[in-house]
Every structure is written in C-alpha cells, then in structure tokens.
Length: 232
Image (tube, rainbow, N blue to C red; front, side, top):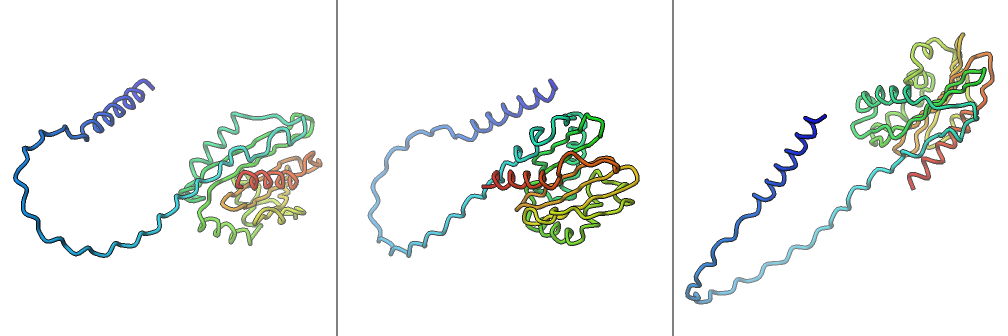
C-alpha cells in the first residue's frame, strides 16, 4: 500500500513538472526595425461556414439506488454482505465478456429469510448495454427456456429442472421473460428484463414443498419502476 502511494505521489510530481516545463520562458524584446513599405492587400477569401458543434455524449444514468431493499421484503429477511461481495467479484470478472465493454454492475441485492422456511432473494442490474448487446439479449429472450437456464446461479440445477410458467413475468419493462425452475430439492422463480440500456435479473429460491412469502413478479415490477425513475 505504501509503495502504491509513493508511486502515485511521484506521478503527480512528474505531471506537475511536465506542466511547468511546457510553459516557455519569456524572451528578450527585439529592437524595432524600419517600417517596410506597404504591399498590396490580398483579396479576402470566402469565410468558411461554421460547422455544427457536436453535443457532448450523455452520461449514463446512475442506477446504484434503483434496487430492491430490505424494506421491500418481509421482516424475516436479512442481508448477507460477504456472500454478496463474492457474487460481485465473480460477476465483475466476466462483465465485458458477456455484456460488452461498456457494461457495469450497477447494483446487486442479496437477502435470505431466517424463519423456518428458507428463501433466498437476489436481484442485480447490468448497465449500460450498447445497442448491439441489447439487441442480442432481445433475440435470446425469444427462447425463454434456454435463456432462463443460462442465468448465473442457476447452474446445473437449471439444466435438470422442469420449467413452469410464471404469470406476469413476460409483461415487464421493454422486454421480459420469466419462469419457475422446479427440481426435486428446490424451486427458483426467475425473471430477466430489459429497460432501455439496463438488463435486470430477479430470482427467488425456496423449497419445492413450500409457498414463498414474497411475489417475485411484484418485486420485479418495483425494480422496473425504480429503473424508470432513475433514467428520467
């Protein structure tokens, strides 16, 4: 850490020195010479028409607060910061590969219930997608089964599970799909949705013999509203 700090300090000093060196020292004022005879004034040329100044690129919207919070869930849910950070590290290592060079992890939420029925809720937002990547995801969403099973976190379980419909999951955002993956030992309500240049994932995992205490479609709709508000 100390070495990195010293390097940063040295770079700052070098930049400052470079700026000083770029300013030339004043030269002596020359002695005036005889005024030369006037020459013929050249004919003025046509003044070029001014060109339009391009507008600066619009900064990407800040979506860090457009997320699902603990207040949106029953009181039995709590945060898992260490596991969430591990998820962040894993996702950020592969963002450019799967979502394009401009994409960032805008936010992530991870909560788990502490009552007798275990439930894990997760949502995350990738932003901004470039136009080509957004179009590619829209194309992939035309095959919901394949897209839902490919979500990070679903893994092998998603490949072996039965996919059931999730009512209302396909009526969110600019484009959305959803379903419930059912295996012998768990269920996963999964939604993928795109709002403009943002791609959002919403997931609830619970035991197949239990009824979840939260409605993942309603939570996805809440997330969509927050994305819209943040993009205004």
